[in-house]
Length: 264
Image (cartoon, rainbow, N blue to C red):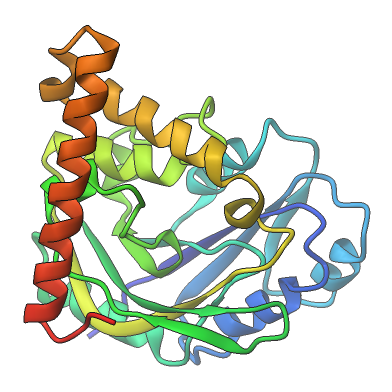
């Protein structure tokens, strides 16, 4: 059986310290039907020197309107039947592509799969193992954090072909808004109990530096897409309801994690 082609999109800006690890984590999958597209925003560090070393890469380096714009450019260039989005400071774990291709072949009705992942620090040390849970729309909506890791997510290109790009006015929670929008449209998500990737937690990352802005964008996305919360026009009442829903979502996720043996 012919292998499904996998396209990996990597947005980049001055990530020369980490981008070679990212590139090698794709190249060393040993999976011959792939392309790796790097959209660089005009780096001024050693990024371009690294990119020129690897002839298999498809890459551009030019000013853009931010990470969402860069990723959308890559989505439009992708030729694979399966697409992954890997930030320049993250990396895939060995065997991920073969597993993703197998699962996508086995589940033709599933649009998007996500696996488990590890937190690593700037020196590649594993900080924490993150085992996730099956897809749950209530938890996706109302939990205080995004539990679907974009680093460990792969999706069918039909999602892009049907016009579902990132919103370029989101800069910190673009993945949350995108996943929520897809879920509300009825696209099918499925969790895979396998570690797919390493997410790097370091002081220069957006996730570390801009947590409050990320939280505000998540709230904005929720109000855009959730018909239940939209009904409450009074800010104080809506905030109280939102707080209660967040507690309920956290409790539900904890209960599922305990039941599935992946809570710690």
